[in-house]
Length: 137
Figure: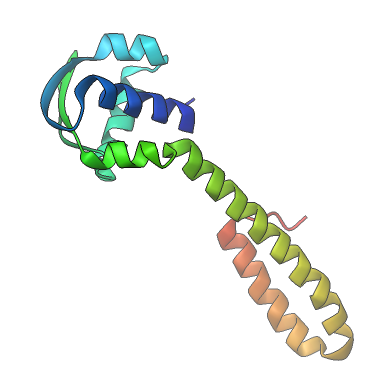
């Protein structure tokens, strides 16, 4: 399973060994063994890194790949990398869930005074919960 920690390790490994810039040839086997990745997982991660501009000019071969490490990779790692990003997303989700639950509680009291409005708000909150992936139970 690819975790934020695995992504950080790969990006750190690339940055430490290659630095910023230039096109480098890298053997896949050593990296796959060190990080416990399959070739498909490694390719997927490198493509993700390229899509978010952490690496550039990715050229995959059978047993090697070529790439340039972007300056963005160093900055991203200095700011905590994928692990920090995952923590922030987790906290934001937890906060959203708490706010949703608080609104649900307020909605119960609104049902007694204005059932029509309460029903419209309940429908809206259900849509928000669906989009955000909040379990309603």
